[in-house]
Length: 347
Ligand code: SF4
Ligand code: SF4
Ligand code: FES
Image 1 (cartoon, protein in one colour):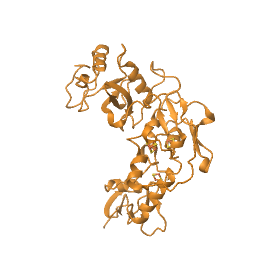
Image 2 (cartoon, helix red, strand yellow):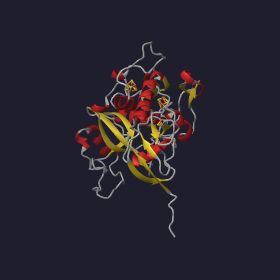
Image 3 (tube, helix red, strand yellow):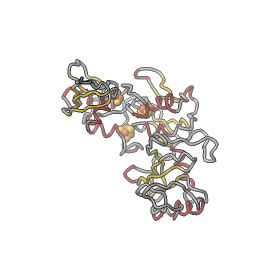
Image 4 (cartoon, helix red, strand yellow):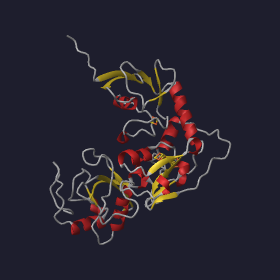
């Protein structure tokens, strides 16, 4: 007797037929078909889509209105189009709304060069503004912790940061306040943002609204070199990407390794590097930065281009860190991987 596969659904996205696991959203199904649907608020590490930004609008055959692909589950026989004239009009309109009060900060904004709002406006948005009245202005930037600054004018209210605070770090310290055009992101009762995972929100924010105080105005992404690395602040060994500009570490970003860190960078309480008020990726960066050139162990263990532990060749670019690694941890690390020459830090 023929069996019906109920665990998968088959649908068409932009003319491509794809069979995916039941329960995936249209954004995820489209990705499996090799189609990119533009998003701001959708972030797989934060769970199911919430439909906050409306950037993922697409047309679904048989449905009278455009739908948000991040909140619509893929269904059997669906015909989805994210490139139709109606879908493009919807995406263009969403970007126009998002930019109505967005400041013209790009030349001085730390997100410049790695900003989804810049990129998606270029690809899907209007080329000119119809805004003829002055934009709303707000106080900026506001330090919400010693290591994080909040620029509310740039916020697109995607709620990634508040969802992280509520659902991932579980502290609910970052919250939305007010409604409609008066909505803002703030800390609970205006208290400092002190969670040990707080640094992650500067990476999660798709615009330059939450920025790292230690990285602000120090580099542009195209000037930096990203070196895959592993954090050495505790035994977990979260995967990191050390950003280097002219021989100095300017920031440390997360490098998603689902089996180890799920893409988040904490800093453990009680560590000697814990900074008052804020931690996470920015603290790791601050720690690494303070230690380069100082007579202290480095906060990061650098890997070579193949992702292997030392013997290390990047030391030619960063003699300070390589030398410190050799001096401080002569017998470490035990991070042998197949294909890597087993060796001691610094070789
Ligand atoms: S957030 Fe992006 S679009 Fe907005 S000012 Fe910064 S770089 Fe420009
Ligand atoms: S601060 Fe950034 S992450 Fe938070 S809601 Fe605004 S744009 Fe989204
Ligand atoms: S990505 Fe779908 S509404 Fe934001």
